[in-house]
Structure formats: structure tokens, C-alpha cells
Length: 367
Image 1: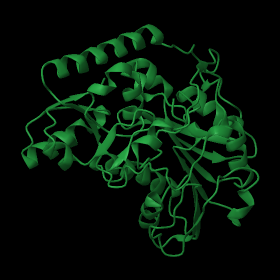
Image 2: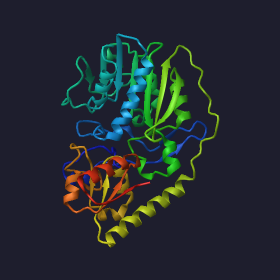
Image 3: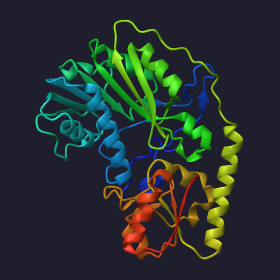
Image 4: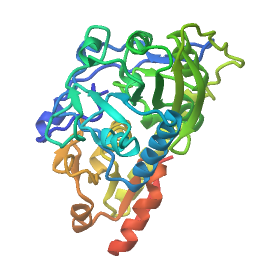
């Protein structure tokens, strides 16, 4: 697998030479935690060529609104808030936090090694362009009232060390919000294209609750988000926390056999498309799209291109396969007649876009 799904390559040669790592996912059948036993953190890098912004999607924006509303409600009426977002990317969600807590913030701090500094930040905020861990936590310089970590913990080989580092900087009463993909959604639907090398630590609801509680936060809620693909845990730092034991046995839903059937099916779909004279493309050039292109194996030559609405991704190439990434307008002009939508949650908005621009194509979700 490519070491990171969201790396951007500006030539096909660079994309084909993308560093690779081994994916070997295993699961604890007591607590439900799932991890890559072959993960090597030394291979991974996050920098200016890493792009994971999804904010141009109306569906994803609505999801972010839901997360921000929950944080705002949980904050109550308290003023003079110190808020920290670990894994803030280019600061998009920092703006949402600033708007939602307007007039009540005194300090807003972000942490992210991929921060480029080319996007404006909310007034008075700052971003530390580094990983957050026990060795860098002192750079906060403040005691937070709210800590947000969205889509960070799945990238960390030692999630307990990460959670405990968050607890070290969080005085009792600090609110914590952790969002992450759920392994159970992947297993339930045999979503083979949603396992990635950089996602080395995956949780279901029970294992996420247990990990956060073991770190010293009392969990009030773990809820599904974005049609069940993510989990959002809400917690509060406490002096003493009694972890919640798991009440059921983890269920892998015969994933391995169903995964093999999934791969056979989609290889045949692309073979038949090309035999019928169509030019198939993927809609979604990161994460799920990168993995599906790899799973297609020999059929990847039948894949015309991958479509992405993020301008930063357009005119780049997908890691390891070298599939070109283009705008919807470019794909339409190229005569693409079959488009496979990588995330079914976005199918509705893509159908709306195609209808509005008069693009008459077959759209089908990959599921």
C-alpha cells in the first residue's frame, strides 16, 4: 500500500515511485481494537504535499456543522474558553470553532505537521506545524477547556500514548472530542477500499470508549456520524475514571471471504465497461479511490481517470498506480461515460451536480 493515501504527486513517475508499506490488519477479539501489525511509523511523512481537505463537499460541510454544533452545545455558557484542535490541517475547522464560539474564545490553537501556512487563520489563533505528543505538548503554552482531535488517532501507532498526552495537558473538567473512522462499518459492508496503510489504529464504539477512559477521560457519548462511517466520542477529563468493560464479543462478519468477492466483482465491472466501449472513472481521488485503484490490479489500465472537486488535487496522479486526477469539467470533456462514486454518502450531491450541468452519465456508488 502507499504509505499515505493523501499524498499528491505532480508527475506520473513520482506517483509510481511512491514509497509503500505492508498492510496486515489484525484485531483484538476481547476489546475490538484493530491495528496494522506491519506498520512502520518511520515510513510515514506528513508535509506540504499531504492534502486531505474535503470542505468543498456540501455533504461533508453538513457533517462538520453537526460536529461543531455538538461542541458548541457541550461548552454551555462558559466564556474565556481556551480551545485546541489537534490535527487541524490548514485550519478549516478552526474557523468553524471560532464562529461557533464567537465572543467566548480567548485562545485558539491548532497542531498539524502538514500545516502549510498559506491559508488565513481566525483572528488571534495560531498553529504549531508539528505532531502533538508528549514531547511537543509544552508548545501549547495554555491549559485547554476544549480539545478536539478529528481524524488523528487512526494515524497513530500508539493511540494510548496519544490519549494520555492529551490528558496530561487537560485539567479536570476539560472537554474532549475524538472523531475517527469505525472499523465496524468497514467490516459490516466489506468495504475493502477503506483500509489504508496510514490508518494503523481503528476502533469500534466499545474499544474507542475503553481507550479514552483508560487515558483518564469520562466518556459521555460515542455516536455514529456520516451515515455510520465515523464515530464521534465526547468525554471530560476526570481525576478518577472507571473504564467500561465490553459487553459483547467483537464480530468480524466473515470479512475476508466477502472482501475477496468484492474485489472479484469490481474487477469484472471495469472489464465489462471497457469491453462495451465505455471510459470508466472514479469520483474521489484520495483514500478509498487510491485503494480501489490498487485492488483493481491488472484492470487499472481500464481506469481512465479519477475525479476530484478539490483544486489542489487536480492535475496530480494517484499514488502507486499513476492514475491521473482531474476536475469534473475535464472528465466530462474527455468523454467519460461511467463514473463510480467512491463514497456512497456523496452520491446525492454528485447526482445533483451532474444534473445541473447537464452531464448525462451513469453514476454508481462503490459498495
